[in-house]
Amino acid sequence: INMVEKGDISGKQAKVVFEEIMKGKDPKQVVEEKGMKQMSDTGELLAIIQSVMDANPQSIEDFKNGKNRAVGFLVGQVMKASKGQANPQMTNKLIQEELKKLPGRPGVYIMHDEKDHIIYVGKAISLKNRVRQYFQSSYNKSVKIQQMVTHIRRFEYIVTDSELEALVLECNLIKEHR
Image (tube, rainbow, N blue to C red; front, top):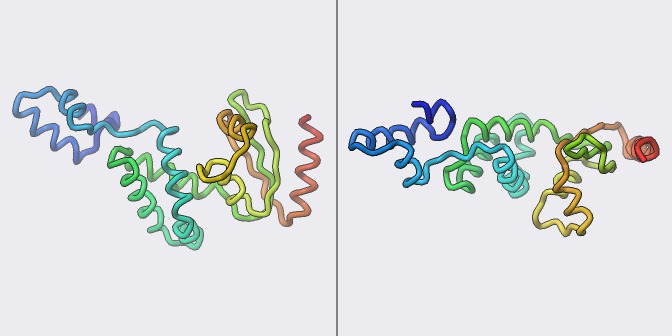
């Protein structure tokens, strides 16, 4: 019961563990032997989520068009990619957060490091597509970009009405934060 409450295993997995406990086995040993420990690390889950979202752009568009079942599909794909190890509740929450935070309009994105210093300012016609490129494994990244991506801890988005407005804002932000 404690393992379920902590999110170490799911309710479904708890039934299997309980059956083994009734046979005299230690619950932690059962979880380890059967590889049941749920993946609840936000960083690990986000890496899988980004990969799944990159591979399923139609589901992202479906969500943007009000089809909430797209979230369920993406959760299923994350579960498949993690071989059932991803914590489903946490995965669902993280997917919804990721889907809601990527606007498709023009704007400026600001990347912050672990000390909340600005490490990069950029503009894009579509923030959603541009920012996603930094994390796609298929995107041909320079060594400089690869190193920068490892230090990103927070994104900030400023949506604009036009690409010209985004360009002006980008220039002003770069001047301000040099």
